[in-house]
Image 1 (tube, rainbow, N blue to C red):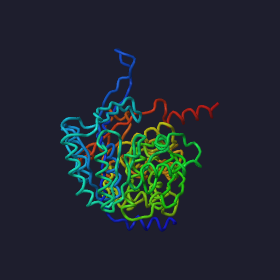
Image 2: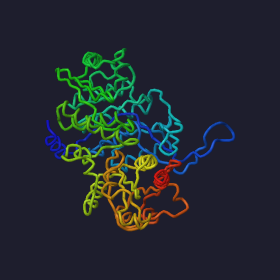
Image 3: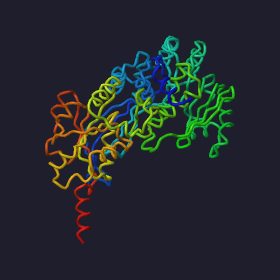
Image 4: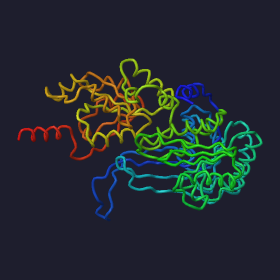
Length: 488
């Protein structure tokens, strides 16, 4: 199937109901910077500047499906605590039906807290009780499942080994789905795949598949036999094994098999790629698409995700853009009314828009770290670039070194950048008002200068974030060094 056909499939995609049964996790990020070592112990001191909460575990699968405009229903457990209430609020904000989430007052909501300095993780603290679900909470989950399964067109079991998916929960989920003719997709955990007996398919990564079959799978020629063993172990219709840089292998009981190559041109972060694959497979199987086409679309979505920093939920627009003709870099350069259309599309899709600006005259490692950090603060990153005349007014007659078109082309080639536009004023005030981003990012060197646009962004419910800078890197110092060498 060609690009035009895939694009048409995405365009005609409906809004299928997908049920997720899985372990719910609250991902909390404490954001700040490290500038000194503690006098009490040889450990870095993190100066916290903000906190973010995101959906983790099965919740990230839900976020991926919502981004593709599916109707999403979730069954899981939360504690009777603040973290559980935050999870419910995050689901409500996405439009996810979390009425099947059972409150278990005997355990805390699972929470993973990550201490972040710039874009680097310093420490992770897990708060969890992973004993198997029992008692009243188990009965409440078993009661919630049948009706919600009957409403669904696909069921995704997201197993993080946190206690929800007992044998009873799995048996009811799979048997009810089979009775309703609904496909059941399992993102598995552990080495006992007999727990998933009767599911439609499983989506282990290579390491998980090796654990299940009890041997290494270093040679790709071993994959068909390993897949057959998985099919037999769990009485499955198909097995889909994600292989990282080697793509995705799939095999079904009817003999259909294949391997699609990895598509990412640059891998920044594999976080959440497995969630993206199972979410996309569930979406397309709910639409009745054959497995081989569903795998191909999931592979394209995963390529988008691993090219981003942090978890990322792929939208229909992003997936369609993969199949559009023309270089992707050129599609990122936005001019005139195209900016308003792009922003309207992003807002309709519920994207968290990050904006930053600058001259970006001679790109260096400091710019790359800065832009990666900015991209990590939301779903899409748009850059505002000073035109040549404004750079000349700000930097002097010898600047810019590179023309606006060249600067925009280089920035558009960066994987973490989603769109590049330009402005002609000396300050970005007007372009910031036009974009009205959820997050405005500037460097820490602006802490005492007053960030242009802060009042507008904060008045519209957004936030201003100061990004850490890479010491010793600046365009001015690079040009000074070049002039010094040329003068000798």
